[in-house]
Image (cartoon, rainbow, N blue to C red):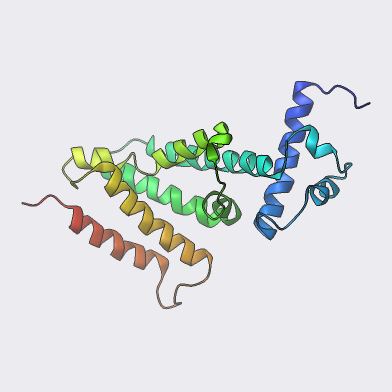
Length: 200
């Protein structure tokens, strides 16, 4: 009969399990490995992961929730830096790009993997919502300061679509070598800025 684990032991092993699962999800995709393979990676019996998670979908939800929170914290930290609306928006955008380029596997876990019925996993839903808000919250102050106009959620999503597209193409190696990602993004941001500028 398995011994009773302390709360700290449970939390520690869950972290180790999520670390191993994150690597496998990033390398092989959502259906590219079994719970038995995950157990082998950890050097434990095939049934051990089931003591901590119901199934692989629940593990994926935990892994993705953890990454969404890390991402949100990075953007929140950038937004909290002193400065005006423009500098805060710029810092948030830089934090987004930096996180994606430095953590491509994590970025893929957030945005390349889909889980039906996210509501089944409250921690994932809350983490994803927090991350989403960090990607658009800097637009409201830009509107208030008169730099852009429009619905803040819509404008924020337009900027997000642009930055996500550029980052995804860069990570996939699909951008033409002659088109530096920064130049492309500067041009795109300039066009969006002109498009959303208040009409005088």
